[in-house]
Amino acid sequence: MAEENQEETLVLKPRSKPPHFVLIHGISLGSWCWYKIKCLMEVSGFTVTCIDLKSSGIDPSSADSLTSFDQYNQPLTDFLSSLPEQEQVILVGHSAGGLSVTSSIHKFPKKISLAVYIAATMLKFGFQTDEDLKDGVPELSEHGDVYELGFGLGPEHPPTSALIKPEYRRKLLYHMSPQQVRFWR
Image 1 (cartoon, rainbow, N blue to C red):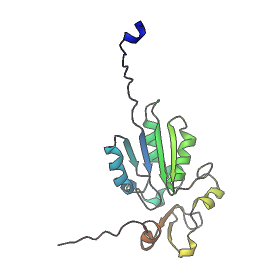
Image 2 (cartoon, rainbow, N blue to C red):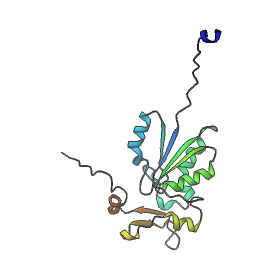
Image 3 (cartoon, helix red, strand yellow):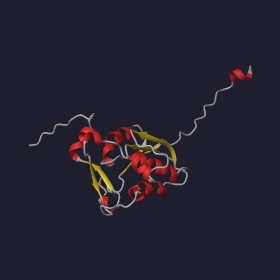
């Protein structure tokens, strides 16, 4: 009977910190492409970081000055390096951003709690071999010559940059996005 009269003690456990998402853009984009989802996630209490990879978004570097994928990926590498030892993030890569996700998983396995690929390139080892170069570039030839290639190391070397030409972006990247109408005075 003594057990029936005992008061229950409510013990509140501290809530764990909400996940920290790191959003990585795809080809011809920048961190700006995540602005709507970033706002929605932050309002829901998540921490969200959007990264501009080298020569993308507001990064002023010329794509033709980059000579390796590691240089292109350097802003993400710097960010992950700067995280406190025990902090983990959820990496989210879209399109070619999947290459950055895979590369980061190999370099920072203890800092990545989860990797999410959204219509993204998934290569086992990232972007390290000639086969990866072939497999990592979407086949879009059915649409014509859609890429603007840059040859920062000279025309006798592989391209150092690839952008989808502006006239193909709506058709290939934003075909499901609503057309916005702007009125100017």
